[in-house]
Length: 253
Image 1 (cartoon, rainbow, N blue to C red):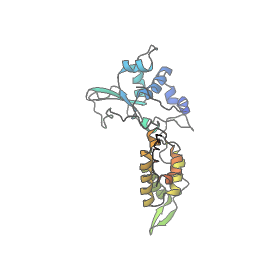
Image 2 (cartoon, helix red, strand yellow; image 1 turned 90 degrees about the horizontal axis):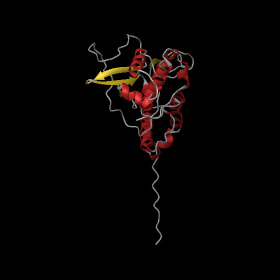
Image 3 (cartoon, one colour; image 1 turned 180 degrees about the vertical axis):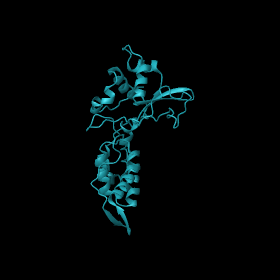
Image 4 (cartoon, rainbow, N blue to C red; image 1 turned 180 degrees about the horizontal axis):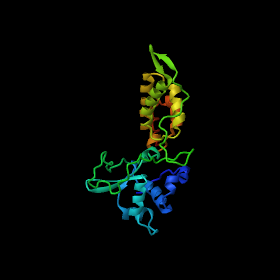
């Protein structure tokens, strides 16, 4: 089943991807639309061709091999069934709250030489499904925002602790909440809001309780999800939130 997906402008400027034929790049985009929310799909070239490139004369298996060797996808086998996974897919797509979870197995953690991977790439550093605004090379999406903190030591509970260490502690706490949030747009701004409003362990517990209420709300279930920047800026509004009761229509006799 095809799904709505996001394509970023930087996709078209990536030099590594540009080395592949245009039809291969088009296939890569098409894979996103038929992959589940984990970026996985069955490795069935005939079906993939019928769903993505039905009017083009091309060898889908060969194109998939090219994407695999370039490390944009992983082709693997589990229980004698073949699968494809788009690398780092989940980090860069946003999913409708009602989209079902994946039922396909993940790639094996430790591959052997028994033919589990139809197209085993050379040993390289894995490439990320992300494209940098500042360069044309493949890059891992930043998982920690830039900080103005320095390594200057400051006292903390009678011990010396660097400001960078404090920053990492804050980021870990923020990330524990962020991973539960379904729309991760505006992460840097959301982190700044988190720093301003979450100061203690009690605050961390409270923001998680607020998020529980938000995720169970009718508006989220209907698919109206605020971006992370907005929600983290107003999360306190959800601490005491109660769903409005449905109004009963009075029937005149």
